[in-house]
Image (cartoon, rainbow, N blue to C red):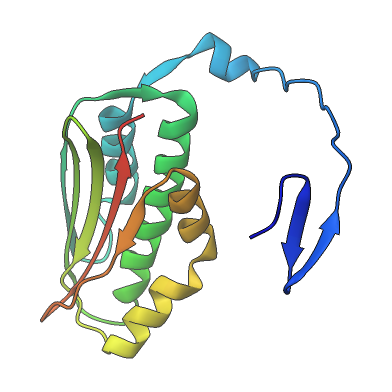
Length: 162
């Protein structure tokens, strides 16, 4: 374990001087809109994707006000996972996509599920390749689950309440 003021890289420690950086000012958007209603924005994303190629979208969201920074990052994750669900239907018949957002006292849960079976290896690779989603979820202190399913795929993002 590296001591304070040292950074461990490949088992070699380099000393770094303590640099006092001034605090970053809050963005104008974060100051003007300290919280936003996340469920409404997610429903708008579902409406944007709805109505194409025989695909039915069901969107069930909880009304929850979140800090702007958290809501914007979760929106990015939702858009990426919705896009990946639509990609699974390319060149095939229609199907269904279900989007759910729930809030408990301790966690926020976003689930995007679709009915298009795909090879398990492809689903796992899809989950691992999405570095953007992984990094955002990690930054929020959460986890991304892709459980085994028969006849579809499910991605669940769980993050602690802000």
